[in-house]
Amino acid sequence: MLQDKKIRELDNILVINPNNLAIKFIYWRMLQNNYRGLHLLQHNRWTFEKFRAIIIAIFHSQDNNGYVRIPRGDEGKFHLGDYSQYLELIKKFQEEYKKSTNKEEGTANTIKKNLFPDLARMGVIDRYKINNNQERTILKPYVKDSVDLIKFKDYLNLNEKTLNDNHFLRQIYNNFSKNIYNDLPLLLFELISDENLKGKIDEYEFLFFITWYDNFYLEYKIDKDQIKELILSWRNLSLSARNTVINFIRNWADREKWINFKKDQKRDFYNWKNQTQEIMQHIKDSEIFSLNINATQFEIFFKKQDEQIKRYRSETPKLEYLEKHNMKKIKGFEFDHIVPFSWSTTFEQALKICSWKNLIYIDAKNHAIKTQSNNIYVYLNSRKEINYLYLESENKKDFLFLKLNKDVYFNMNLFQELKEYNISLNKFVSEHI
Image 1 (cartoon, rainbow, N blue to C red):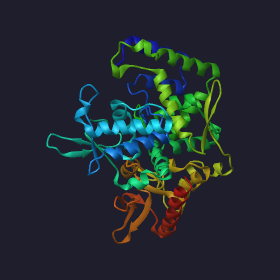
Image 2 (image 1 turned 120 degrees about the vertical axis):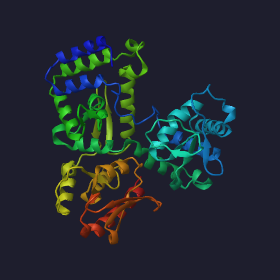
Image 3 (image 1 turned 30 degrees about the vertical axis):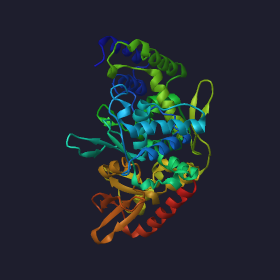
Image 4 (image 1 turned 45 degrees about the vertical axis):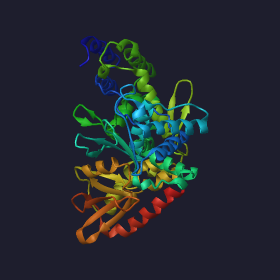
């Protein structure tokens, strides 16, 4: 818990407008030790050159079974000479990165602690922990734990030929780097498409509200509608009041004022803001969003304006799904895009992905499994003899089985039409990277 003195200082923010929902939320959020919310990146400025260098480095340092042994802890607590594979990996990364950028980057710590977690979240590698019985456990992408081994995902099909094909590697980079964001691009698309939000989200709305998406606020998880409500409440404040809140938080969370606090209690406005800008910069690398930068404002806009945006506001495809499948909303079930929205890099792709034909209505547990599995389940199929719909991966070996009327609500009379749409959509997205 924060010291009473810092809480009393923060209380002063409520004086600016005691009844404003946005200010009340910001006040509550700043009291939480996990106040930063979304932590999607390990502070890496990912580029294709960096991605290519680390892929080549892992490939050339792996053993005959595809594993690379990784030391635990910080450099200094281990002798790098005892880990020949990892030492080779570091040298190869530095060599390849410098060759393409003429820059030097990559230490034993930064590769292990920064690049590997992001690669796991992208779905490029698996990280393994070995217990005292020498049993290997694959760590989930967002789990922080000791790592002893890494290994490429089998479905990447990397070999000497593909490794020298920049088009192939760039395709992997474009496809898998989007997995980091899960539903964040879709959230932005839906918010910007909302007529009440007038087609834009500025930097501080992203910082204060969007980065808390899917986290608990009091007794409920923050969803799209609640974020919209908070943004509108924020915009109801005068410009002077908004600037006062921003300056107050900037001053209160100045890192120099938190030096003597425990690590989990520190507040650092600039670090938090920089992390947010990193996320925004990554998301803007598509034709859907762009960042409009001037001296005072950082906004996200659609690069292409179109009347179809109005049709594809967040609820339209979902309502069409319910109508076509002849059903009503059910508590505990969620809409899921089979081909994920994060894969869209053009406006045309976004509209095709947002179609009701690319939706399924599944229970929350299976929805979480799908989104946390690096979006590999993107092909629609079925097994009618046992009343199962299932989603399969590219390699046709990994499946997510969904029992009809239990795990998924789906009108099987529409199956063939939607399967054909799924095939054409996967092909369209793959061909237009």
